[in-house]
Length: 134
Image 1 (cartoon, rainbow, N blue to C red):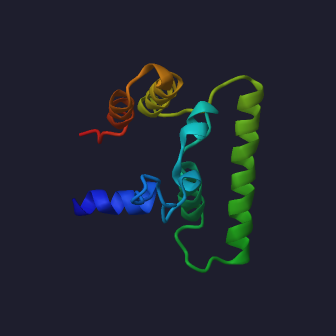
Image 2 (cartoon, rainbow, N blue to C red):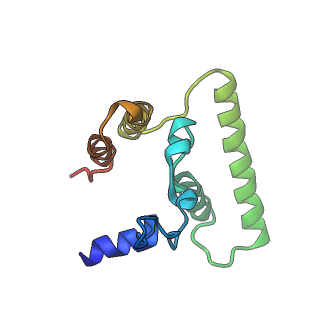
Image 3 (spheres, rainbow, N blue to C red):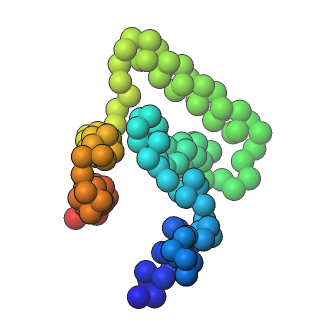
C-alpha cells in the first residue's frame, strides 16, 4: 500500500471524502506523454543527452578545454550537421535502432485505439512496450 499511496498522492491526486481528486504534487500535464506519442514527438530527452555525450567526447573529456579545442569541436559539429542536412535533402532517414522505432509505432497504435479498449487492456498494452529487454 505505501507505493500505491505514493503514486496516488504524487502523480494522480488523492481522493477527497466527496469522491473528487485533489491536485497531484506533480501536475499530469507535466508527465503525460499521450499528445507526444500522437504527434510522433520524442517522449524523452535521450537524444539531447546523446548529443551532449558525443560533443563532450569530442573535447577529449577535458573539464576545461582550450578555446582552440572548443572551436575545433564546433567545426566538427558543423560538418556533421551539414552532412545530416544533405542526407535529409536526399530523403535518407537517419539511423535509429529498430527496436525503438517499433516500440514507438506500437505505442502510437495503442494510443489511437484507446477508445476501443478497457482501461486495464490499455495500461497492459502501454506497459508491455516499456518492459526491460533482457
